[in-house]
Length: 155
Image 1 (cartoon, rainbow, N blue to C red):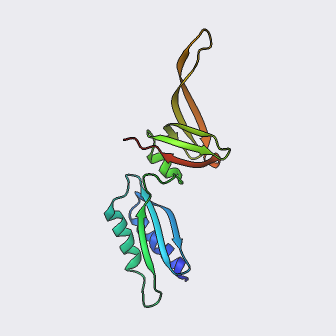
Image 2: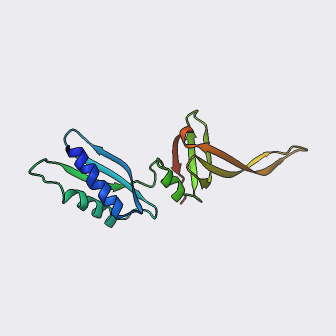
Image 3: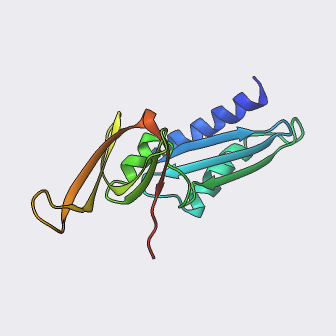
């Protein structure tokens, strides 16, 4: 078993013990620098990162293979990459850029296995008469069409 396979198996075991956590990214460099990024259905706290780190580190032997290990949570400004991340962010405002470069900002009202649904209000010219009216807009966007999606944080 290669070093990478061993790390992948240990990480899988650690995440199986904590089903509320899920893997965003695993990167192992040529020099055995292991970078693990996790997220959770209810967020990720420091203890979650420590637990995952220990599950990997305590089962690897530095005498056999030298390595460095970093376990981190997906940051608040990190792009969403997994369906599970979209589902946990339902009700929050997203900024979505499509592969065609179109940018849409709205509330994530639904995230299923195929598409996300964004809703927002916009001011548009009235169909009859002068002035503008507020209209409710809705967009269904397939995951395959999303170049980047980030949660909009308001202060």
